[in-house]
Length: 280
Image (cartoon, rainbow, N blue to C red; front, side, top):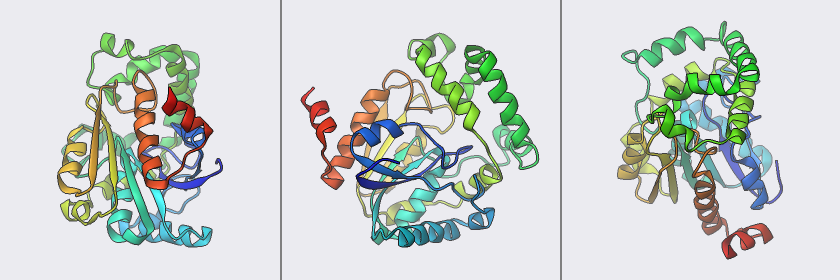
């Protein structure tokens, strides 16, 4: 999508190549976005998810196919481990790395109730029906479903969250619920996120921007601090936003500005829209 200098986007959990969060802002800033469905999502074979090494080989093959020697990478949420592994093992292919609400260390394990719930709700035989029901209910009762799912995304209490959220944000949340699918990808994610260790983080040599909400209820902000501690060129921005979905709600504009400023520094990309934004 878009025209300009390319960015490889490694989407988050329950997503695919049709992701939308943050895309319009990056396209307006003059970037083109390449989003492959990660292993097990969309029509990408789960075989590529047998390990992070296999997944990284797939991304390298994609870059070769597109004639891209190296590229800026944005890794989101459960896609964080994929971005970290790619930057650590194929440093010549990654110009810079952005981690948004990203998993950077051991995440869900059999000790967590979320782990157990995921293996029931989001296994390949059931996930389609789960997401159809969530999407259907979101269309009928968008605010009610948002309230029911708040604790999955934020540590804030309901009243505090509503001060950050507008009706247009609820609409974006509803659209997200209608495009979400897990395939076999989310269970692959749970396995792969626990393959990342400190040595992977220490091996990253490119500039890294870490954007994470201090109120994230899905992926603790401790993941951001952990990555910052072990990545030599990491720049951490802890956001005072409502939770995991940093692309919606109060503070999203500030987050997008930090992201685009970082990418501009790495690429030298500057179009008319970014000039006007900086003047403001």
